[in-house]
Amino acid sequence: MSKDQVDEQGLSAQSSRSQSPQQQQRRNKQFQIDFFIEWKYIKSDELKNILEDVKSQYDIKSIQLNRNNQIPGLEGTAFSIIESDDSKLNLQLEAINKILSLIEQKKNQVFEMMMLIPEGTVSYLIGTSGKQIKNIQLETKTDIVVVNAINKFSLRSVKIAGESNCIYNAIKLITNKLHQRGITEDDYLKRAEPLDPGKVITKVQLVFLDVIIDYILKNKEIEKKYQIKMKAKNIDEIPIKYKFKKGEEILQLVGTLKNVQEAIKQIIHKISSEFKKLEFDIRVVMPANFASKLIGAKGCQIKELANKSKGAQIKVMSDKDDSDIGLYCLVQVIGSVERKQEATVLILEQIECFKNGGPVLESGKYINENHGQEFKNNMQIQDMKQKMLDQNNQLIRQKSSSSRSIRRLRSRSESNKRHKKSKKSRSTSSNKRKIKQNPFQTKLVVPTYLIEQIKKKLNRIGREEGVYIKGDDREFRDEFVLKLRGEMKNCLTVIQHILIEQCKLQRR
Image (cartoon, rainbow, N blue to C red; front, side, top):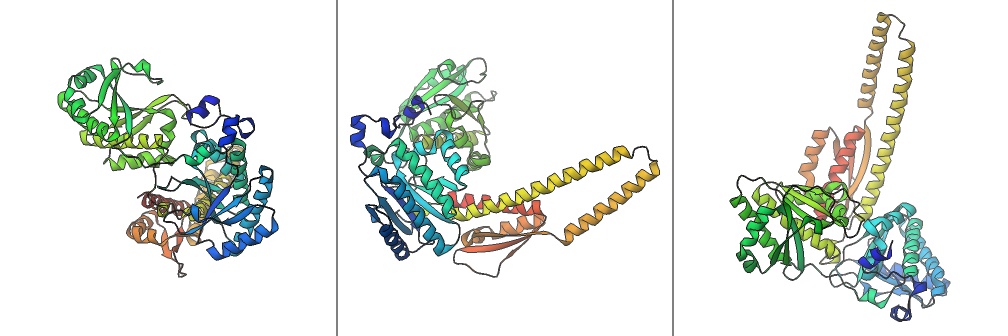
């Protein structure tokens, strides 16, 4: 990461070894490592006994429960490993490894651990476009999510799911990276605040034809009514590598997010009324490094925005690497007047939310409680995909072998060829009967509340995909076991539908 990139993210470009005397004074005297674990994995009394046991084995200043780090609205226990001597960092990590192994012995399953880090170190840990956190996941074979900030909670939660040795490797990597960078008092003082559209000042830029911009700027009542400032800018003033139409310019609006959103609604309405024969789209100028965030994993974020705007077509127009700082791209919105208005308002709020570091949760209870289960389900899907890939490779090899045989037998008579085709057809029919007699079967563990919400939709998806879905007789406190039977690709489709519905409910 370059110095300019580091400064852009508001981080110190120096490591702990090369800090100035002033920075050394701001650095915490104790490199404290904080954690939080939910009670569904281990009870408070059990954890307290484990911590006391480990403390007796290692020469560390303090290993204790920490009520100050209790996540609001989430049932669990926070604990800290405190040592003022930096040379004992490896000893702290050994103690963490011992704690994790003892927790795993209690549960003997994949579980989650939350590492609590200062708000000021979050962007450093994630890295440009999330590259650093992705590399840590791949290297340690864990599933890691940096949870959105929680209102009135000073630390940021990093959820790590996997087996205890994998979780330990991830914690070790994260701890060493933060220790190398150095943690200061300023990192702990930084707070994430909820986005207030009525207070946050934003600068929005939209691309229109110059005749449209001239018409808008002449309507001074928009500026007065919504208390904003508007002006035209040349497209050459913004670093966007995109082929604009002749006569296009940029309209810039500055004001509170709420007022700018209302002003843009009015602008879109006026344009559609004045230029009825002119087909126009809305193109929002956005920092290029927000492109992947706005699109979301497999397009889920941009699809959700389209659904909320009742069917507007939204497209991120970018040929730039979204890791580039200081560059911009365009977000295009197409649809009816109402859809353009609604989609543009949502996009502006989302962009401002990215600038603010992401949405701030009102309480810890909104944290994805089924993250660990999603990790297990994802592993199941990966295993199934690998099986399907192996089967496809086998079929390709068989097809290749069959093709070579056909080429060698071309000299044979037409009757023999028809005979072989008929034999092959009978063999294929026999294989299909065998598949029907021995269908693919799997089980999926899902939250009970999810089944209650999507029961009817689940039955419909099962009928459409030809998959038999049945609940297991065994009962759990918060989870439900589904049995799926049918063709493998159809079962995978049903599982994907279930996970998508689960993500939608969690976002709500």
